[in-house]
Image (cartoon, rainbow, N blue to C red; front, top):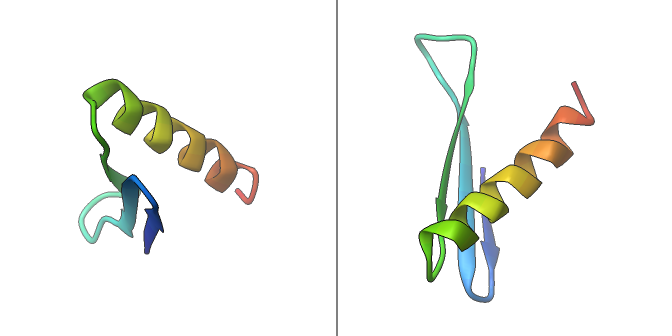
Length: 48
């Protein structure tokens, strides 16, 4: 699943070899990308 924001994006995908969800994020800075990934994962965890 890819979620586009006006100035950043985050991509989530289930690993085929491990019981994990891989999270990729891109933003203007590494810090913004990390904050975006963390925020999206916090939302995902609410469903688990």
